[in-house]
Image (cartoon, rainbow, N blue to C red; front, side):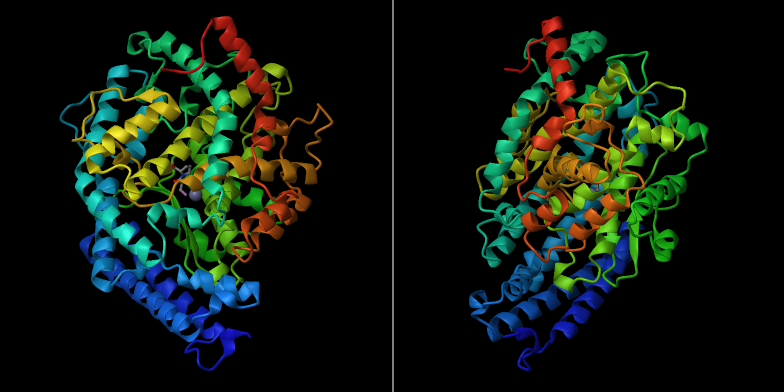
Length: 593
Ligand SMILES: C=C(C[SeH])C(=O)N1CCC[C@H]1C(=O)O
Ligand SMILES: [Zn+2]
């Protein structure tokens, strides 16, 4: 039977789509107004609209499940899939007063994170520094160990610590919601989005496969940082977290200049060239849009250019953390990003534009299928294209690398691969542990008396790093990372880091840019720019949204169903060999106590 059209259902399929899309639009408008102008008035409106949409999804859920109690037994798998998407409500399953409390706690934590200010190291009386752009810039550029330690400690003390009790309350309500959705806890609810009983094991296996490579890179970076900050290192093999160029030590590309494998050869840090050429945030978005359309993908609609917020305003508080927004009306799509003219932000621009491209490609799917095939797919779209954009070959193509600079030699490729590994390989343990940490909290393994101890236990075990200053349970250092107070699942970025190389390899073959049997066409040199064949292959998979289980979408894009590490290992294999030899030569033993 096609249950959507039975008269007994208060909503027909069309009406259900329209109703949900309309409510989603209204709630998105209110959410956007708040995120781009944090004040009490906008907060009230946002919370009220978010309660409305929670009520609607609860009402649909109750109506549908009482009308069709046996929906799980339906013959049509697509119908069962649609019902399943309606019956998993997340926090909306909470009774209204509990939902209000949940939404208020989440809002309070995100507001605190987004408006925290710290004092400068050099100018003690200046205490209005924001994470973006001020602290990010210091962590990227400063080589003054004391300044780095001050900024790291100030941020972690002031952004994380004060939200610890709020987070504890949030965890309890979040688990209540998970149980109302028939999950044992929120961690299980998050993992359900990957539709695989073995997903946790699959992720652990991917990590074990790539851990030796990570440890080789960790050893090399440790040796080079010891040359610069000698006295900060001891014999425990750990790297102090504040010396890696990033507030969370999740990407290390900013310390590349301290350890360039071949200093006389080209590097892909084109920040200087971008500034010299007068790049603006708008130009960065236009360059990205042109890359997408060169593949035959969809150009950003008019509303996007009119309504997006791509620079931090100076007259109000905003949530600076970059995000892409689908307003559920098939017309309105926006990015909010406090963009700076740097190479890192050029990559982030492509990352966010990838979200919008995915939204555009599946906008004609039924409402409940307008999602990524799994959360990692949504994070992988922009990054996949950025793997082409960031190649020396492409940077020359768009005039950010001088045409006269040689880029086809072995040493330049090692410089390039090392810079890419400082971003992608360094990220893997962080991408994994940030949810492993929260799974352990949600399933009760860890209670609030151990929140900070457990964070640093995992940070040491997986990343081989340690805090630069004394930490205690008065701190809540996980709360200093946006996704924890903002309650955004994080395993999606680990999954994205793996599958984006599978997507890249497949699209590179499609574009004739890579041939496993031709050593003159290594995977890391591939640039799919202007390949309509690659674009249509990617679009074929992404247009499916979440209408089919993600292995089917993976097969459409890559020809295989599995998520596996073969592509990322193939991409980096020249570097893994080089690092192993370099560490042996230095007598640097990978690993830590
Ligand atoms: C850019 C975004 C918004 Se979806 C982001 O949160 N990312 C992208 C890289 C990993 C993660 C982070 O910043 O921690
Ligand atoms: Zn993203």
